[in-house]
Amino acid sequence: MARWPKPAIIWLRQVRKNRYWRNRRQSSAPGWRMPWSSAALYGLVLALAGVVLWKVPARPATAPVEAPVSHATQPSWMDRTLASMREPGPAFQAWLNQAIPLLGLTLNPRNFSLHLKGLALTALRSVTGVQLDSLDGLLKMEIPQLSAVPTPPPLPVKTQNGKSHSKSLSPRPKAQDAVDPALPGDGGRVWAELGTSPEVGIYQTHSHESFWSYVPAGSTTAYSTDWSKTVVQVGWWLAQDLHGDAVSVVQSRVDNMSEGVLASYNKSYYTAKDLMQWYPTVHMLIDLHRAAQNVPAADIHGQKVAKILIVVGTNKLLPNEYWHQNLEVALKLAKALGHLAPGILQGQGIDTVPYRYNQQLMPADLMIEVGGPNSTLSEERYAVHDLAEAVSELIHNGVIPKAP
Image: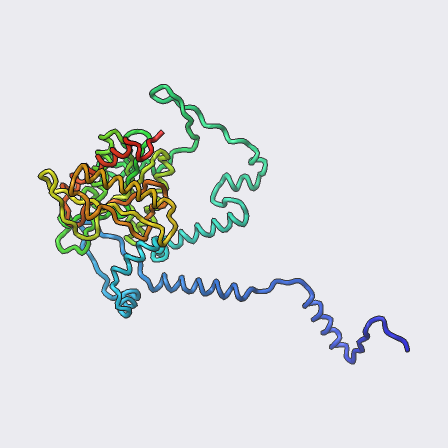
C-alpha cells in the first residue's frame, strides 16, 4: 500500500483552499498586537489623575496684606468628603502638606503640566541616553566626535590674599542675582550674601507667615506679602546677627508660598537644593518659621522675647538618613540657647515629628520656629539675636564644620 510522504488535502472548492492558505499566512506573519492590559492600566491612571485635577480645587494663593480676604461660595468635593467622614478639614490638609509635599503638584494644573513635562524628558533620556533639552547633548548625538573633545580645565583666579583657586567656566545663574526692591536689606537681592564662603544657609518655606498685629483686622490667616512684616524680615535679622558674630551666611528670600501652602514644601525643596549647589561651603541649613498657634512670650533680661522651638524630622514616614545628626545638633543648640537666655525655649525646646520637612538634605538641617502669630516684631528681633549667638557658638566651637 502506497504511503504519502505528507498528509494530502483534497479540496472540494477552490474558494476554501485560498481562504485557508490566506489565514495561515496571516496567523504566522509577525505583527503588532495591542497590549490591552497595559492600555487599560494607563487609562485608569489617567482617569484618576483627571478626576483629581477636576474635582480637587487648588488652594488659592495667599492675598497680600492690603487685599481683602475672599472665600469660596460653595464647599469643594474634598470639603464634602471630609464632612461625611467627620474629619476636620484643616487637620487633613495639614497632614497632606506635611506628609506628602509633592501632592501640591497635582492640585495645581499648571505645576502638574510642568512636572509631567519633566517626567517625559526624563523617560526619553533614560531610553535614548540623550538629554533632549540640552543643545550640547543633541549636538553630541548628531556628531559623536564631539564627545571625544576634552573639556577645558578651570581657570586659576587670584583672590585678595594672593592665593589662587579654580574658577568654573559655567556662568553664574541669573536667578542668583535677582532683585526685589520690597525685600529688606542687601539692596533687595533675593539671595542675600553676607561674607564670603557662607557657612549657614537660611530660607523660609512659609515665606508669607506674618503676625496678627500687622495684618488687617478680620483676617482669617496671619499671612502677608509685605516682607518687612514676615518671617523673611526675621530671617534677615538672623543673617545680620550671624554675620556680626563672624559667621558668613546666605539668606534665600525666594517666595516659596507663591503657589499656596500645599505646594510650599515642594518649592522650598528646590530652593534648598539651589542654595546647596550655588553655595557648596554651607554646612548648616535653617528653615525659619513661626509656630502655627499662639505662643506666649518669655520675659528675659527685662524684655519680652519670642520663644523658640527646634523641629527635627525623623524617618518614620519617608527616608531621612541625617535625622540622628540633626537631632544631635538640635540638642546642642537647645542647650546653648538655654544657657544664653534661660526661658527662651518653648517646652523642652525640641519637637521630633514623623515628617522630614526637607531635612534629608544634609546634617545640621533644622527647622526652627520663632514665636507664633501673636508675637510682635520686637519680640522676634530679640529672639533671633539670641539664636544667632547660639548658632555662632556652635560653629566657632567646631560642632558645625567650618567652611574651608
